[in-house]
Length: 218
Image (cartoon, rainbow, N blue to C red; front, side, top):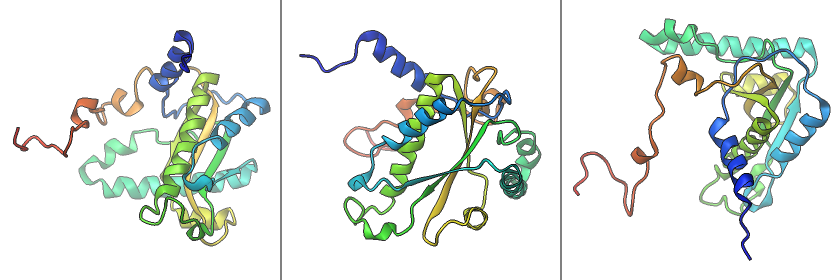
């Protein structure tokens, strides 16, 4: 007996993958609590190496604290712009976060005391980070299916954010997620839409038997 989903179910899954976007523009509407709970449960069902479940979620609901998080992002935005040299002004024109209008602000972090987990991490300790990324992707795809936008913000100093949120030593902030209703999803990734970058096709990233480059012998 086939274990596959029905054709309609499969298409729904692939549609969520195709139409997932890194959102920066939110409608300022609230996010129903039951929807947030479903998104968090989806994240918590992610695979993790050794079933260590290294993800930790901090929901930022205090308005003053949220402004302090936003100030950290702004500080790094300016530092990143300065580091980009000739692309500084173009970068400053980009909207790089949705902290101003998103309904929910979620900080996703790696747990502390991760060194005691060796299953699957002895030679690849970064698998804990890969597990957290899977949790974020689960939440992102579930959010798209719910019609909810998510924006992953990585412009921040993790040590400064850890101090602000009283995170324990050894833990590490990985992402600030802006979550909430949106007026519309971007028809294509925003950075493509504004001409900042181009997504490469799969064919440029798929090799067979060995790593290939344009200069590799046939």
